Image (cartoon, rainbow, N blue to C red; front, side):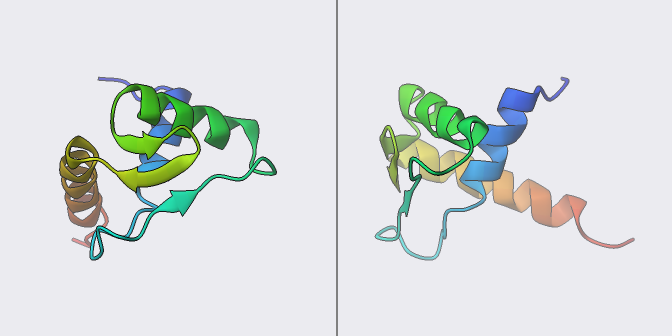
Length: 79
């Protein structure tokens, strides 16, 4: 499955969340680049974050981010 620029931006945003604390969210400000603003909106539309400008991960978002961050740790491990 190819990774589109839009999907890459969503992955980048999901990696910003601290999975050690469910009470720690993020806020994408109006000064953020358009790609990041659009990515967080798409994540909101998909039900992964609680607000269109960030907020907290939903249960589905936590599940997705956990798998994503695990995959990235595995892929970033030196051979």
